[in-house]
Length: 250
Image (cartoon, rainbow, N blue to C red; front, side, top):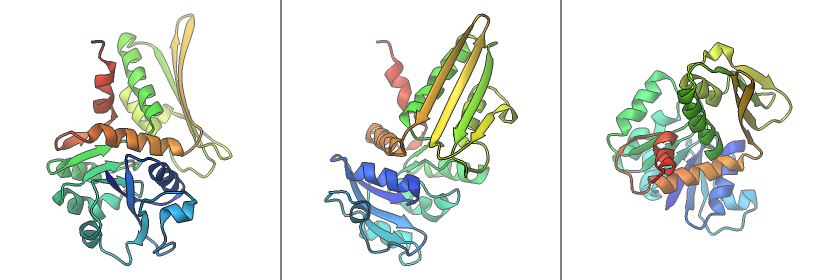
């Protein structure tokens, strides 16, 4: 299955690296805003031994319709920005290209656009696309259902330069009916990302913790999602849709 990647920052590079090393997927191209690295291959730049094309293009030099027509893909993986979906979404949907977005924050307009595009193709969105953190969220919701009156504390830790509350922490808070203002944030050094949910019961405490050791975890999450969306029909999907069947006791 051929993949087009939007965004080539620290996380985008890590995701590209994972795709290049996976024989079940092929990195067809990378699209960046700037012309830096244009006309190079992602494999050559990252020092990966891969036969994938992985050609790096700039949105300043090629239009999205031309890119999709000249270099067709099965999936577009989006690690760009909140506005990115407006630049490629309709063109991808018209061509039946599946969209997997890992953009941390979307406004209401972007979320509505994702749902609109889902009538034409498969659209998946997760603010944090690592498998581990989504398992944490899934398990936390089950525990809250069992003990609805339990005390809950959410702590998120990230690298020093990260602005605002983690989108993942906000999603966890929303799922557990915790006010976003009560999320505890830590910013220090080069922490990739850590999320902890503390359940305070009388006489006991349960802690669910997920820590990203490497940004490669995002790449593994992308491929897990892509592999599980292969045969799905048009629609809007999230991680819960993918994980729920695995929790069947049958």
